[in-house]
Image (cartoon, rainbow, N blue to C red; front, side):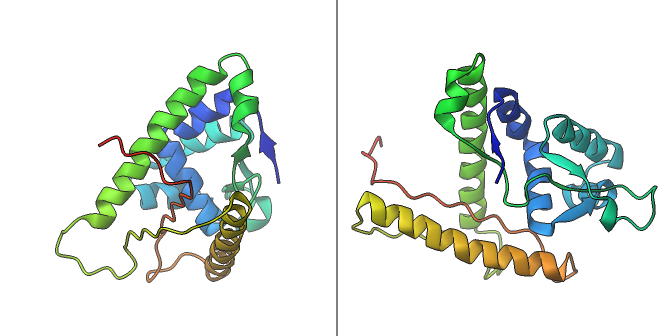
Amino acid sequence: MVMYDDPRILRAIAHPTRNRVLHELSAAGSLRAADIARLLDIPANQASFHLRQLAKYGLVEEDPDAGRDRRDRVWRLVDPDGIRFRTADMLAQPGGRAAYAVFQRNTVARGRHLVERALAVDGTDNPGRSVSEWSLLLSADEARALMEELAEVVERRREAGRARGPGEDRETYSVFQLIQPYPEDDV
């Protein structure tokens, strides 16, 4: 597992398009810029630009074994387990607080968007779209164990999806996990 500590990485992954590129690569394992462009409905040159930006920060790399030939550029995450960083380490570095503020603002907005889309009444019947909320009595150790158990389930599903590969009957789903002590109500 790679642990990133450069605050500029937070700004790079806070960008909505780059963040989505990372999510698509996380789900699929490896993709071409043209595949990403199709999935995100953006021009291929824009997908290539964002891939190069992510590569500049060491987040993605070419996957030469996945290409059909030497000209076929296929990309993958440097760490297939995703991007991890310690917040305290990032905040302690020059520019860390500002980069974290951008990352935090965009992550909150993305989380809100995901919940709003999952709760939208739009006439579609998508059984894979839901928001669930439970209240549990847990110790801090039990909360950590729950996070690990959920991560194992998600990882099994991700590996199975990567093994099958992209297909007409599959699309990338977002699993947004939040486990915390019940916050004080601000509303």
